[in-house]
Picture (cartoon, helix red, strand yellow):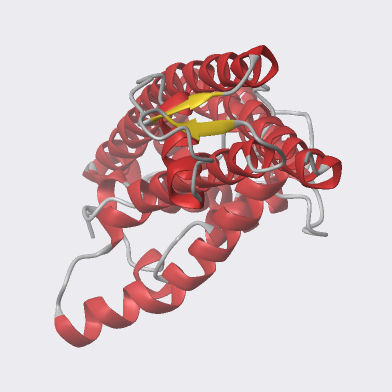
Length: 296
């Protein structure tokens, strides 16, 4: 006997999770709803736990936060795809034991759904008719898309993380030079980072996950560098108006900061540049460390 409600429930679960997957991996406009909640929840926990553990026990955990968020999101996608297809195959006499012809147990159904999603195709049970065989084919195609795009997505996140760390390293290298303590020279040299900042801002607008990868070396921490840069430009009045003080062109820096503020942090932070600084603050695991001066 087929249970339509069970089948519809399973199809709804798969559709919702697959939408979240596509929204996160290929929409190039942030995270899906479930991925967003998981990321925010894990990050809120990390901001409480990681600094405490590092101060109390001397264990460096911040480098594991970003990869852990990726693992949690990927695990969610896999598990709920599995749950959805298990519900659909459980909605009727879909599977029988290959040796005894007895109806498949729940464990066998889960195993079959998992093998279909993973495209392995190895199972001790068989479908009972063509309709269920078609559902198996859909599950296999679904699984192939998830596995393929997941790999590409992870590589993209890692590449953006490296690009952001290069920006932070270059910024801190420029700021650490003795002659850069003179404001005109500081603005002139940091202005050269404008194209790099725009590139990072565009990539973070596509996927914000790289911002949660916190390096152990503070000189590579992009949010820390961005916060310092934003405060420096704000102090010089270069974020509040369109004209440019002296002969320094910081238009690309302003555009990069503005894009980050608009696309990443809209929680009543004032203008785009204040929003960018607020975004940087949010992505710094330990606020106390962010107040230190690199190269001082």
